[in-house]
Length: 449
Image (cartoon, helix red, strand yellow):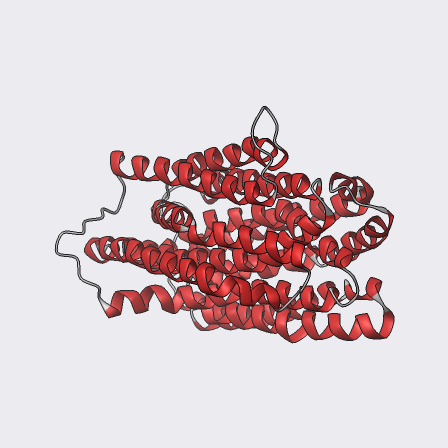
């Protein structure tokens, strides 16, 4: 991370997580397509549970960001024992996360879903699905922990392999158990939940085998392990803002569900379609960020300004190109996308306008996402959290509520590009501050050492 040419290094470290993210995005889309074949209510039920899944993912990924940032910085500073200790604490946090998720599934799922609907069918399907994915989240917690430890040391290939295998298993089994093909029982939404945790389980098993059998820049030992508050604090100082930043989307979707369901369940289903399709665009950008984060974190710790900024600029160019492709996808093929989800006339009418309007926000989002990655890599995660909170809770939700009741359903979707423009302005201000006060103070360094 301190020697190879930046372009080659970013490509080699970003391509595996980008491919892995694309496969996971494909699973999310395929899963929802088959759920929509059951009924519009089934798609609405899964959409109501989606914020819970986002919240779980945000806690695991956010903690992983803090973990990866700490490990990469300690490796850059040549502090091997501290890097090893951080990795061990990552597994401890994975156990804590799973316990919290399982408790929510057992005791909190029903009260949560009743906040949005009293439809008995939607409630029943949603409750079953929610409990399966929360109680079975132990596999996700551990696989993400191992993924982030590997990525922090520059190993992007192994995480790509076990994540891809899990996603492919999900994709292959989804139609079989949701629709009851090949002689399997037709399990509907229950099948969707079981398939999801099956894929996560396989991914975790492969991840554990790869982690144990292969040598890495960090080693994990639990002999004489004791939880150290300082190490947890070092992880969570960077990780907590990331958790907040990602989990805000969970609250955003919940809030939008509550707003849209007053209009119709069809509008809720459209939102569910959008958030699944948009992963096909956003997740590759996030995957590219996963490759860029340890490079920037390592060179920040090694005090190499030139390599840090070169990585940032290249990552921004790549993110912009991906976002442009995303905008083209939503503007050119909205009808075809909605048809995949068995959309009726009303759902098609709302969905086409929604996809085209929301996609306008992707172009300004390119800089914001890469800037957030840089903030995380340099231990300024609080800036990322501020951007996310203001963008989603300060702009999207209030605007969506006002636009719906003043102008109607088609105006709701304009809240996304308006909020993204505001987020871009904040990201630019924070970027200039970090660059001037810290990055510009680093030695210039060299692109290659």
